[in-house]
Image (cartoon, rainbow, N blue to C red):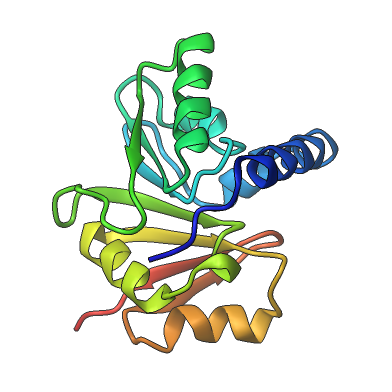
Length: 177
């Protein structure tokens, strides 16, 4: 579905994101997602893992963070990060859309810094709708898009409705369909 970028481009992006994370830590963005201890979190399009360690800390040992990406280098980086930081609550998923997770099994989906890159966002939103619990949160942040385009991109399929807007992200709830 979506195209895999070259290893060179992935490494360049990873370097830029590491710099961003140093200058603007991801913890405040994660705080807006309402992640609780024991939560099951899906970081969709996790890339090099800027949100993974922070989310793993927030969910604690009783929670799980699923880090999904289509790039094999992203999966290897997350696995290395999890080993290095001893994050037993992190699992990787190598996929371009399907999560393989059960219906209504995820408390929070992080769709951060990726929406602008999706070739077929409605297909992915349908998968996220399927795995998100009825009272779950879809947390979206993408500074590459204008606010109106981002909001309409998430809500036009009528799967999600805007729940709240933070300084750095938007939280959406499942619509009843």
